[in-house]
Amino acid sequence: MLRKEVEQYLQKAVPGADNIELTIPEHEQFGHFSTNVALRLAKIRGKSPMEVADEIVGGLQTAAPKGFFAKVETAKPGFVNMWLTHEAIQKGFAEIVTAKENWGKPPVEEQKTVVVDYSAPNIAKPMGVGHLRSTIIGQTLYNIFKFSGWNAIGDNHVGDWGKQFGVLIAAYKEDNKPEEVSIDYLMKLYVDYSSRMKENTELGEVAKREVKKLQDGDEENTAIWKKFYKVSLAEFDRMYKLLDVSFDHYLGESFYNDQLAAVVSEALEKKVAVESEGAIVIPIEGSETPMIIRKSDGAYLYPTTDIAAVKHRVKDFNADLMLYVVGNEQSFHFNQLFKAVKKLGIIDDQQMVHIKFGMMLGEDMKKFSTRAGKTVSLFDLLQEAIIRAKKVVDEKQPDMSEAERVEIAKVVGIGAVKYNDLSQNRQSDIAFNWDRMLNFEGNSGPYLQYAYARLKSILRKGENISTCDVDNLKDETELQVILRLQQFPDVIEGITKNYFPHHLTDYLYALAKDVNTMYATVQVLKAEDAERNARLALIGAAAQTLKTGLRLLGIKTVEQM
Image (cartoon, rainbow, N blue to C red):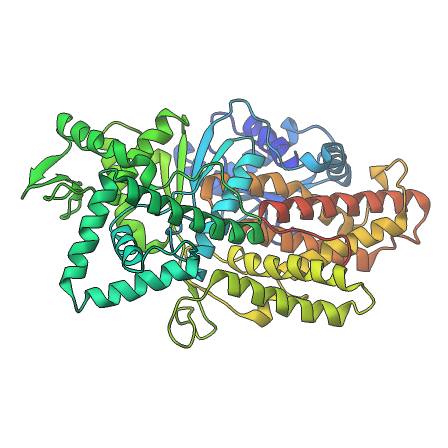
């Protein structure tokens, strides 16, 4: 990989320097690669940054083989800018061709395990738009870690326990326990009973008794709970199938129910927890509010369950890293959780990361909801995306069969929804704009899907590619595509450290634009055989990288659009 080669030569040119930062300038006038290490070393060496930069230039000219750097220059206040020769870039493309679909995968010396906690809807409720961000951000991170050689474990920590089931069971019994149960029926039961509880406190007491019976293992209530669980899982699976999302485990709150007493006992034994007004709490440094792990009435809370889940993931999954893909509003909880498990000696808090994300908003930048103020159904949203995409596909491809247009509309519609989310900084609130999402010309899912399909069309017209001589790739636009392809492994590696999927969407968009520029600049299909084959090979590598990148984002591609 070209970047790794440049880093090796820099290490030789600057012996003893740690963590040399190597950047890729946005504009080639500042080099193919640049470093500001001279600024950092100047004070240590008692010299000016430009003097140190000049020394690094001399060292690079000695460290690198002849023909690798076209030129190396200094720039104020102390940058070292490096340009590669055509030959070095061409050699970098040969590496990409050899790797094929594995381009971007890093070498794995020691496999580590990451547990990604994502989606986590509540049982007995339909999935709303609010569940979308956690689901697709989590799946993307899972995909990228798995691609990078990690043992990735996806855990859907569903909300399948707690006082809401007392309400549901009480309402279900009141309704004479009908045999047929749907997710919409359960939601109506919950809303109606909860509304009546405000007027009739006895209904609340009934619900409390029902949840206590469930927690104590009552056979009837357990059977009812399992019925609700089965119906809910079927509904979730319908959504996940549409989104092409999967999990390795569905270890919800109920899975840890019989482990909670041990969590509290251990916390007390280790003197990490204390009694406070009858409750058991874990004091958290820097916070006036302690973490409550058992209420004064003996009931456990979800922080207790989260501690049990951490213990399970360390013991049974051998987790080296845990990612919690949960909204910004839960920052306080996870700050407490991470400090609590560290105090308990379960895992270091540096091995746990809260992958925060903002809300999804409507075009008016207000909370995404129906006119009545109710939560928007995720299924309805996805169906709307498919319907809108179908109209666009019908206009663009009237000669295709209906079946083909239906399939493309599904891929484009779902892809547009995902890309709209993943292409924006996850920590920010994002706006939901249909026109922008389904635009085939801007930074959108359909644009990248169309770019891929167009490249595949060119390759089909080119038919079989015979041997590729990289020496024929000389045009600046061709070399730019190679350099962009060379960035792909760095982008993937970066996301395993910073957890921002939009860095991948930014990269894929830039790659697509670079390839389009190349195709508009040089002849491909009508070029002489040697140049034609080399350019087709370059287009093939770009198409494969686009497909790989979109697949990591959970976005499908089609061969024709």
